[in-house]
Image 1: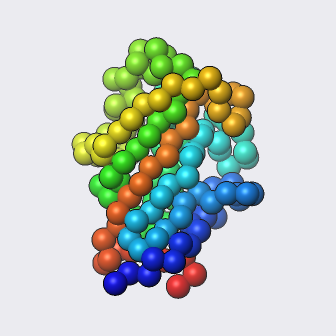
Image 2: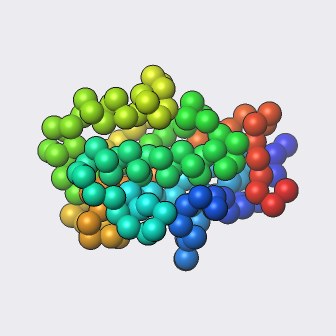
Length: 142
């Protein structure tokens, strides 16, 4: 049986978290904390929803990889949006970015509209859950 004790997953490649974790691993299940389009300099990338999707989803995938996960291990993604029509208008481009970064498989997904996110300039925040097979699982600190 896998160790179910929750352990933080905080990749060095992402800004150091304060008061949260980028991910929490329990057993083979990785709960991916909300990722906005923050770059390494702690700034939200510019250029609109497609570029922010690329950065936010890349941040999610960085945390996933830190625990040995791959995009195909994602079982659920929730996308919070400050402007649903803008996201819908760029759906084809966002789909291309998804396929470029994660391939053709999509997990269960939800898109939820919200009035604001933590950083005022953020247009998108992505959270998720992944189940990583034993043979690839990397437990931080182990």
